[in-house]
Image (cartoon, rainbow, N blue to C red):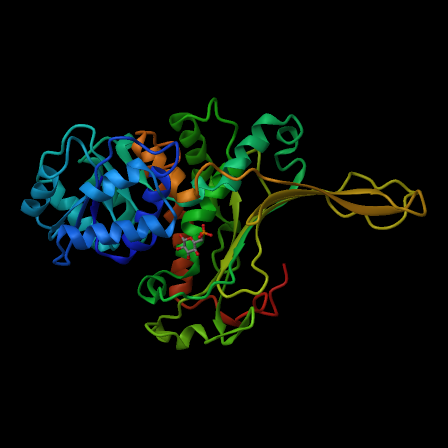
Length: 450
Ligand code: BG6
């Protein structure tokens, strides 16, 4: 594995710990060697310390961990220069997985420079989000990397696809006779995919202030979740079948009624208290340019134009510094065709809730009440999901090393996800949707009712 940007924050915070988790597990690849490349003028010893610290942070131990840490190399390089990249390729044994732990603009330049070299057959490219900044830049990047290696060797990482809860959508849908016959506009009234986090900015202004909640979460992660919910049953869960079905669902997806202004809302947090912690307002955070009007809470309502989903709103919402920390997929069924006279009380719709933290599911149903046998009462059947064998990021990396792109985002899909949100971004840039505010620690703007 060749890590470009090895001295950067992404490699230290996310990638190396995930590699450690993977190598420390039974699923870890054997015979992996790690080469780091960055602009910092480090020697091997400094790099090895960094790698060892990252592995220790996830308590990864074992022979494979010791082996990698002892032999990993670091080369100082400007990865936008072909001659430097050649030097890095020469330092790898065989065909590397090249991991771009770099800002998008540098990634694009590094890919262009790689185009001047001959890559060893079997080389894999691993790219982080954001993949481009809109549909057309994503298409340009796809063209550049498509010249380097075949699509199946390109892994656009979306760690949500490795989350055990998200993967449970597949087990739940396709191994129970109960859900699939109901899985359409005939029976489903709406779908909500909500990922509200208590976390604030966490010193990520440099990245986040240029992205915002819509791009950080909805354009990438939540649309992948939508695809798994909305897709038709694939013939198998292998890469081609699964990714074909996801792509089909996303191709049919657009903003509700084609009206990006009416279908979207945005807001930014002001100062407040979360879990007893005082948080400054987003605009006051260091590194933030308030004039950019970056939203920390975004919501968009989408439709999926297929027979299966005609008329069903898919509401995607995600935000930071929210008090409730609600992370769930809610499938709300339509009411029964007729509530029988003789039953008293209110029948609420059946709801399937899949929580993305804590990892569990719940089915809300109506039953008879405790006193009056004709009264209606509410109950919830729930179950914990089994923990995944690996944390989400490690699961996606396992696919990279197994040369299996099932959990990687395919190029056409990456472009579709931008096509879906581009009209919303455009309307926000034109200020057609007000930027509202909410106190940190609250549930969002008080005017936002579901
Ligand atoms: C990342 C986003 O991709 O996903 C973060 O950049 C977000 O802003 C994170 O907090 C959420 O995922 P997880 O798995 O850490 O809950």
